[in-house]
Image 1: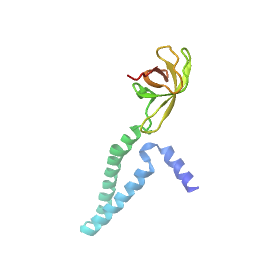
Image 2: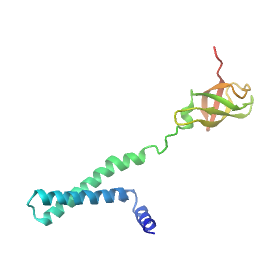
Image 3: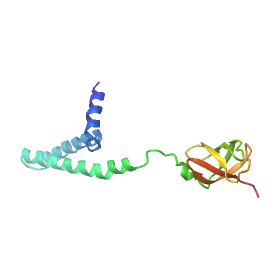
Image 4: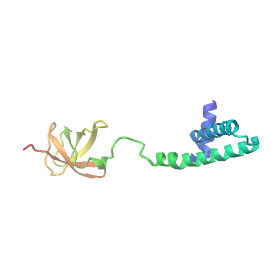
Length: 148
């Protein structure tokens, strides 16, 4: 129940107040307070003020150098269909001259099954090796790769 309440609170506050940052900042404030108290003779009120300012600084640095770049990063390790141009693969469902078939494109992240059309408008039989010539509207246009 507490998890649901905290999730709803942090979701309503937005990305700037995320739990990682809040609890990380509390750790910095506490650690700073311990260090200032142990290694200086500063008045406890000033220690609190310095610790809070240090925590705010850490919060801003973490937000700008970790949270923002990570939220802008691609969340998936898979590649876009547009990145398949030039890749080779295998026909798993025969591609008719004027229709669609299916191809298997292997990659380091795993194999992808994609819908394909014949670029040359010639039938490409199942099991043949193909090369992706073009990508339009999330469809691959492929040609049979002939061995020399």
